[in-house]
Image (spheres, rainbow, N blue to C red):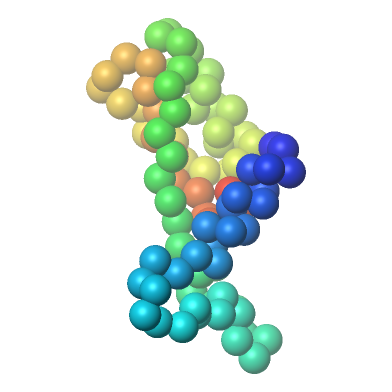
Length: 86
């Protein structure tokens, strides 16, 4: 993953969408925050017929369960926010 993607991920994690409120710290007083338990669902398009192979790669490299869509060529998997840079 490129440095630009990692930087964008860090910026999104610190983003405050409500301009009237103070940003919320992700880590307070050395205690791990709830953000470490947040997950996002990623949808990926893969060549038709390679859904099983792609799902296996996700399981192997990201240690994440993967759902294969009924639509051909699409897989979905959940990943923890702090693992997005992987």
